[in-house]
Image 1 (spheres, helix red, strand yellow):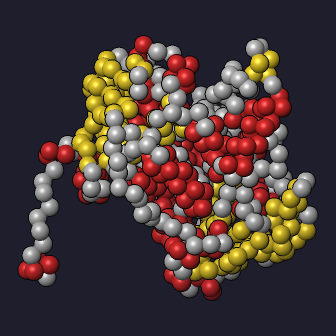
Image 2 (image 1 turned 90 degrees about the horizontal axis):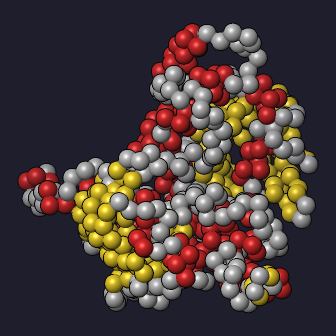
Image 3 (image 1 turned 45 degrees about the horizontal axis):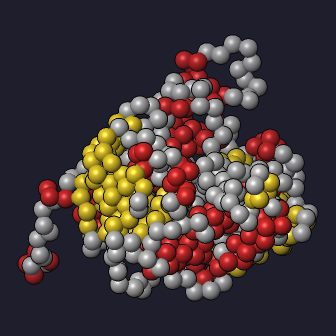
Length: 519
């Protein structure tokens, strides 16, 4: 029984203040041996702050911490690791040009002068097999998939003797198949006595993998140590955001207008010069949302880059409105009013060290009233940014704040504010809700639906099938850079088969179930 197991972590009355805000307000949290305990909350609720305190990155203003029943003061990540606590961050901290083994040994006192790589390769291989974390120790990190890189981060902690693992949004960058592999790994680890804190806001995953849940909202506990057997997805969502959350929308009927995007026989290469798109043909009309489904890495992001003029094509034509994308510049696409929400909100969609104000004017900085000739009109910039902050409900104390310091949901709102305020008829959105909490997801999805209802064409690329089926009027499925087929009824069975390489015309019709077969 879980309740009979000893506590390995007990945090009592934790308070953490930053200038102008309280991130954690008298928070209690506990973790038992061999369990997966999810810390759930909206972006900015205080989850990461609380775990950064446990990992030794922050010092609390008040409160106490016990590890294995012993009071501790965790002054640094090193002191936390000495107590067996390791944190695996959402954005991996690996050196791409080094091997798996070299990354795991990096920063350790041993080996000091001579490294017998074959010896340590064997040790790390055996550690991986033991914990269902198999990865080639001699492979360079840049050669690994995202899921394999995550395994390296976990192995790094296990090699250092950590038996308490904090995982910050571990599924945010994984494809569905990789998530299932990760969950199997976590179950193996807890069976071996490891304890895991799983920071997340994906409700279905939490109910699948976690033993208990603690919910934070605005720095305070709203539910403590709740068994996942005793709570529903709707209950968790309400505890997170303080209101009822709608998981499906009553869409208005699709009113298809003229064709706003026409992609014909397009091929393109990826960053390694290998074929990424093969003879892709598809279209989007005004007043509809067209989804692109597919497992990560099958050409969806390359398609978005081509459609927005960010990547050249090797064959075919793309027309967006009146613009021939193949013979135009990115600036031409901006002037045409093509809105683009890239997959990477941190490194592509925003300039992290620049203010929110400067980020939201990036598409019209050279136009009046934002600029007057060669000079920026700073009062006009502030007025414009304040207007967008209010209109798109960007929760920030000041528009002068560097955008990298915002929560994921607020960064995405700032990106949407910039893109939609300059959009004419076409929105290209890639993973627009990835890594966001349920409240932020609902808000972003409503914005996308509003653009469709206002008559814009939307190309929605997402790895969340539920999101695609909920929002899209039609869905194309991609596999290895090719279109496998198109569905308008959201048939998950057909979409799943096409995602694994079966063309729509080759999928047999599902036989109706007879009474005899049902028995």
